[in-house]
Length: 496
Ligand code: FAD
Ligand code: NAI
Image (cartoon, rainbow, N blue to C red; front, side, top):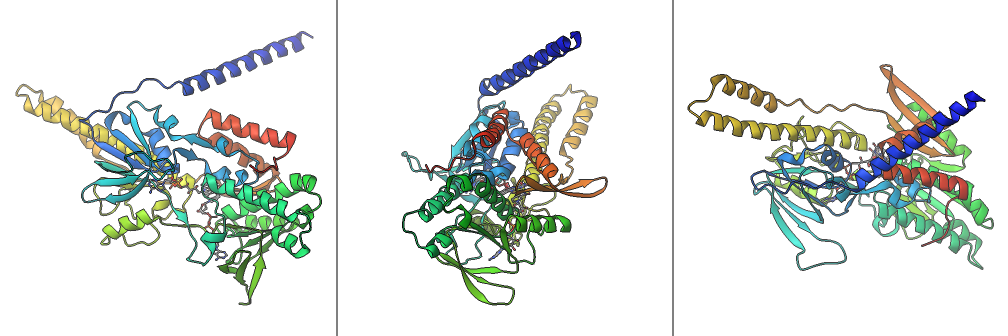
């Protein structure tokens, strides 16, 4: 009995301590302290973007040495790995975003944040021109500012390979608005299929969800869609749910080419069990309003009718990036993206650094790479800041006739250390993907090799890995609450 009483007391103390720590952390995060004002003697550092690269850079940056300006058309950071879960309502959109101002308000010196799209970078004049592209406009819409340093992290846009009809008829899965659009469209297709007097042929078309691209985006989305069908649609739309079909179209011989062979097989067999049709060696050639035109492995052309089409065939450079390359044609010779050196400095442009998907490096365009590059670049800027301070110190020392030579020598040594940079090194932490029916796949670099695992345990690992990497305590709380909500009440099938 005494043992139970003690256990109860210890549990109570633990719960109270955890609650206290939670309240303390959230209060501290919600009440940022006063910041230093901008200092006209410090260089201006402009950051383009608010995604993985820009945000990890900002989070690690010491703003003491720079006047920082952030320009991005979206005023938040989006946790893309959980975006497919938003398409079916497993997670709510706002659970996986964090306002950029929340990030910048916690910095030592004030950071200017502009919700705008950068339209042009002039690497010769060292200027950026940006535009307010939101619906509400004031008197100022187009502005050009100077930079001393520029961190270029604008990511990529959706690759369509110029295939006709993609932009008009397909949904993408890159931005938060895309996921919301997909969610609305799924429900629209189902409601329309359930409409009185709908023909059998039309029901089959409307209930056919087609995904183009068997990379991780397409696979994760197909998995989420399957869960929605099994867990919710069957309950609330019994008259049409059995007609729902999911087809994944992939041009290559298999899905997920970047994952290990056994996980590819595991995913394809799980999809088969879940009745997700995988059409490999099949290439979409044309997109019509209600059907995709494909060429299959036998080079035969046929049409596949669809209700909803999700297009996930990878990335291509943004217009602004192509324009920037066009200004540096001597050195920027890769169509895939911007070329940088080992220190992430843009080839051919003074004071410009580039990170993430907009670059063409030997690494895959992933959040892992972009965030590690952002952290690395913040350390480069820390050294730049130190270097500037030491140079100033040295100039002042040398101007004093009574200066101690030993002090000068020590400052020179410090300066040399600050000027010495180590190149960027990427450390791969593994690849994870959710494939539906509470299963995930994980390729993990362990014990000097690769450990591949698929199933329920990998799903628990996937969930805990992503919860721990979410931006804030707020995000973590909201994502955990969404998962609990779905378990208890199911997903919401109403349309907004
Ligand atoms: P982004 O994160 O795309 O950020 C680009 C930023 O630039 C955005 O804020 C954008 O608004 C802004 N911007 C755009 N144009 C302009 C402009 N003209 N001026 C100023 N700003 C501009 N990777 C993983 O490692 N693991 C995963 O599980 C994973 N899951 C993913 C799931 C999905 C659905 C998607 C789409 C991607 C996923 N990725 C994942 C890939 C990962 O999201 C990208 O590699 C990563 O976002 C790249 O970071 P970035 O900073 O280069 O670009
Ligand atoms: P992707 O480039 O990885 O895959 C696109 C797929 O579409 C390719 O397999 C390609 O063969 C196929 N394709 C292209 N054109 C086609 C056509 N006309 N018809 C049929 N198939 C066609 O793109 P994705 O999945 O959007 O990923 C982009 C990046 O983001 C990748 O680097 C990926 O690793 C990363 N990412 C990582 C995730 C994870 O680790 N869980 C999740 C999502 C994305």
